[in-house]
Length: 132
Image 1 (spheres, rainbow, N blue to C red):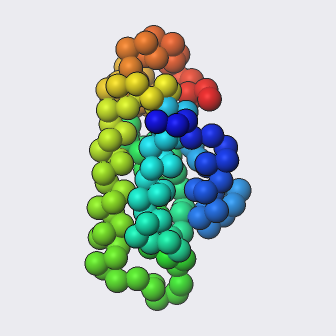
Image 2 (cartoon, rainbow, N blue to C red):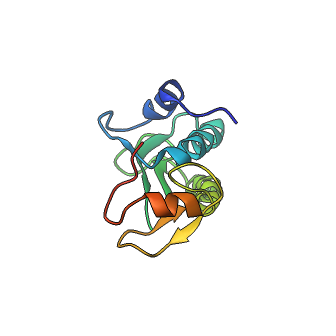
């Protein structure tokens, strides 16, 4: 697996509604973000991305099938399909260390739930964000 660098992340950033929004996950999940983006873009090339973050120890890839318009411009079936595609990566993230990408598990030993491997669990101090 090739590491997802800044060049690859520009593919994802082009879909943000607000270009100033940051991808707010640890480096161990960047490859998952890129894979999720590519799976979504394969079915919804014009998708609009609202946020990419960690929420409750899971990848939250929040998107619409295409740019939002007043009254909506996608069907319930399209919205459900988008959710199905994204859910695959949210579930995968629950077993991938957000810091290094190794096998991990949810850690409830701190105020913010994170998915970490044993090694990173001991290195990520309580109350600290995961550094890139």
